[in-house]
Image (tube, rainbow, N blue to C red):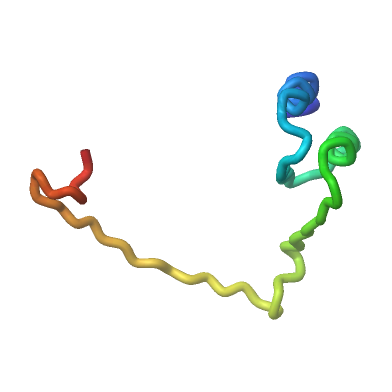
Length: 81
């Protein structure tokens, strides 16, 4: 999005925020413009890199989750509105 012209908007928004704040930046890629932005807005940043080629433990484990729908009677406080 930054390369599509949103960088000035991001800087405008950041200028209206308090100086003391927690800022989180997530990006699948870090282009030079994103790295430059991060250097100006983040204090003591931590970088977490995830490598899909080398999974932890040497294997992928997929877990399934079961789910079910439950109907609630009208007037029940847990019934959807």
